[in-house]
Length: 594
Ligand SMILES: Cc1ncc(C[n+]2csc(CCOP(=O)(O)OP(=O)(O)O)c2C)c(N)n1
Ligand SMILES: [Mg+2]
Image (cartoon, rainbow, N blue to C red; front, top):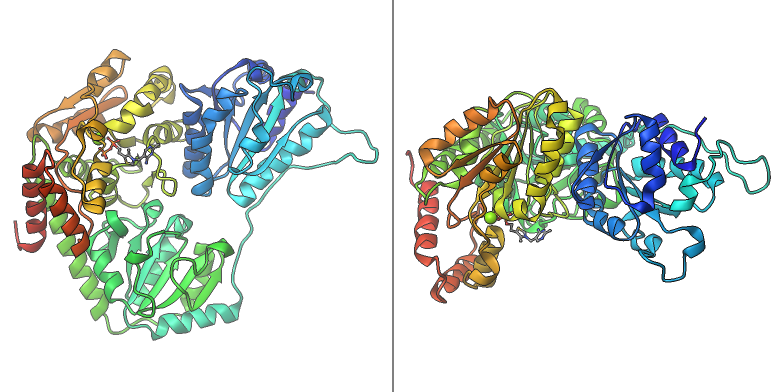
């Protein structure tokens, strides 16, 4: 029997399968802290350095396990800190439960210290937000919050005034009018479109001669089905960022990423296809999809509201990716004419040649693409790779070659800086034996990644397997934005806003008891990876990289080229290097061979 409401909530969550909570203390959740002590490690509290990071970890936990992620924060400031990480979960459609404290019931409405209107504050981010005002409510609030988070694949928030946490638990409400009796359990349904819709879709796909597929995170778990359908249709497969791990990079018809951080092979496939099959993706940038009217479209998505949103589809299939593709399979005819497929495979092979050539181009001191490229041949089986937001995301999406069985994620839709390290920590807790590698920029490292290294230092010995590598790209620049200013606005780099301190990330890692390697020469990059992957403790690789290597989109329009020229003409402080590196990148694409 649970003693207090807080004990009861933790016990109920345990019954729901929750064994880990990411959080940070405060007197607004003292009741929960006491209950965590009595819970004796089940659920355990992973103590973070900042509440935002606990919400990112809860989201990362959901992404890498498919389970509910849970975070806990105190009233007022602690609760407010959660928000950005919760929005990451909301936008990437991950089930996360936030437990937050509140002032005592009798003080509410008195402009009391740390009194914030939490229900209003969490309203937009949450699918469900409620305050527990009496112990009888606790049972159905927990049951509903968990079920709604799982079912809506979003955030649920429960607010607990601190005096309620300490009240005696009520396991079952009284049997009287107004009482509610809720229960536990949620099983994801099998969602399949009607047969006639599948037939319509098959007709479109069978009639097409040049089929392009685009897969997103909704297709994670449908790897074999995606590959089988692509084989039958003679299609190429492009991936949205969150679908990074849907199809491995060693398949010859996988064109890789799409959009600004996409590949030339994807760009050409979308430009030339006559049919588009989109599976589980909400990739936002329509200009990288076929022109309206160019291709006939079929889309599969588990959410009706995401159908026909980026491209007008002829057939909209509401269903699970794997189930729907499996049902579609027998209706599809194998395309005998494989010339489109051959064209795609040629363009994929050419593109990987360009990627390798670009990774080998000289830069000052290190070409960031080399840092990613050298990992490819060393990437351990089963690795989990996390990314961040910045130019580094471009190389993460484009240069890394993932194999089957690996997992990968970033803050995809919110595109927030600061996802790499908390996601990696959550991955390490969920899968301690799997090697985890996080990539992030120096801006994100300084923003919060370095603080969470303290969390790594606190817990890593518990993981049993120490393989966690945090790779920081030290370019002394908020590089993505610098390039956006040049290419989109035609403005030169403004050092006052763009340059950031040259912070010794590797030395910092050493200071907190981790391994740190600072790499300053191209010839040392490979060795740094070998050393990190064999290290007896988590390692930070700080790669000193060139900020003037352009994260070029796969297709540069005249408008963007004009903007860049204008930015340089207006006196960009780095114009010489920017021009040289941009030309070389472009030449690597245009000139055959090495
Ligand atoms: C929380 C947050 N703040 C600001 C931004 C805007 N932004 C996107 S990328 C970027 C630069 C990131 O710099 P860094 O981490 O050093 O990566 P780099 O681009 O240099 O690889 C900024 C400021 C963002 N996406 N998220
Ligand atoms: Mg940077």
